[in-house]
Image 1 (cartoon, rainbow, N blue to C red):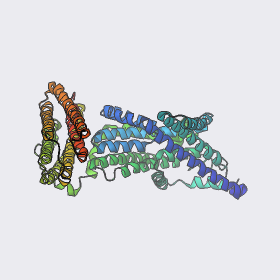
Image 2: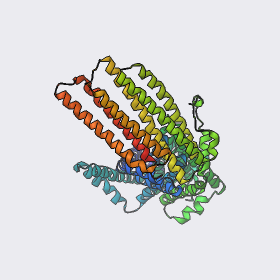
Image 3: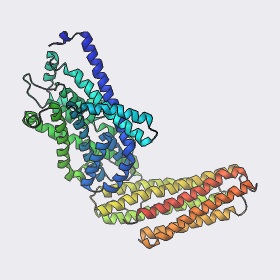
Image 4: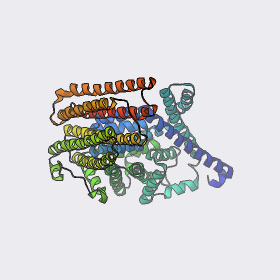
Length: 557
């Protein structure tokens, strides 16, 4: 059969159906990924924080998350976000990224089921899911419905594409064209570019599988013998899949960019190693997967899984080397050379991570002292109606931000040095502490805004209010002193006292707000004072919360 035998109308209809099937597949894939992320995203993030500090558990979490969300890109972007915020170390990220590459192969395995009779059952999910979304008022049921509808639409798209393409499996021109596509480097590049455009290696692999299930296998010989050609596209798709993480890391911290580089290194090196094997072993596909599995679509899906599992087994013992390579490839920016005055930390101490963590704990509380001093300046400025205090706070907060960035960078370097699980927990706690300390400085800056408004609008507060505010602030100072002893001197018996002080701060805020509302109703307080006063005491309460978070972050570590 030739193309001329089919006729223009048939060819046009076939092209339209293939495009429609591809569109249905991509939309279904999008619905499935987004809905699964809504259903399980928060739980998976929490699970990451609790269990990703072990190498094999990290791989398992990456694989499970990607299998659930149906997108290694989403998982990797999530990992980049965790690394950017200091929640996850580069080593943990490397393990999870490896697992994500395994998890992404589940999509191809599902697509391979398209050749089985149960395909119609999956398509039925489209109707069931749509009715669940339409008639339910429960958000989780709606999301579940959309996920099922997305999965059904994926199979509907595959069914349309494979069914339409099947009639072309005997067309001489198409068979000849596919048989000439054997250049390994062109096919690898095609896989990279195609995946970069589609932003999903799973989607590319699934389309290749749909073609195979229709009898259209790239690189098939004239007598039906299989070559390695189609496998080069699969390898290229794995490299192309890294663009999602690379794009998501733009504008983030150096450490987050390093996480995306780890993804690139892992996929690229693994693909090139496999390509070398395929170039040397010309009949690899025919000698292995073609003999092990009868159906071409299953063969391709199994190779996709095999490739990612083998790469993970090979690279997992060398995860630290990937981390070190990413640090070399993504150095700190030159303009970051002007660093704040770090008192307790020196790079030479990094060779002894346990000592470095102890020094960084002291450095973090030095930063906390600076934030509390900034808060003192801001609070005193409000009480004294001193506008000049605002500039002092802004200048001090710039130094605090620089110091916080320096501490975070040191923590990253400590993590990259191959520390123990207990030390990694301490590093994670310190990352959280740096964030809480930075928030105290930001809240001090908020107080300066209230001072500006107080002076500009000539706000006058009721008699005795300043004394009550000072009383609330004194409780905060006492709470900070207790928390500092808990963390630096490990006096964990003081936790109950710290919690009691935090609760006293909450009660003081509530009492002050209630008294303020009573004065307003009695006409004893000017209404224009309302916003400033309530925001001020609320900010003071939030400072107490962040100090309490610092104490609890190290509890049990």
